[in-house]
Image (cartoon, rainbow, N blue to C red):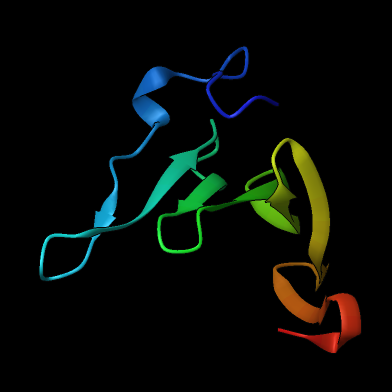
Length: 94
């Protein structure tokens, strides 16, 4: 997925405005999918994109673009029903 594109079937209204601190400086820009789950986040401080893989509104994995247009797996989530059982990440980092 290209950072400047909107996936087919995703309404433009689901793109959120930047989140800000009390001082008014933008911190991150969040994009939401059709189920209102986070889809992409741009962290303005690190200038890194985080991409969320979700099913039915539940986030299953996170990928971060340390290199432009090259997503790297950074975290997976395991659930039993609606309860989160585990988080798995490289080197057991959270």
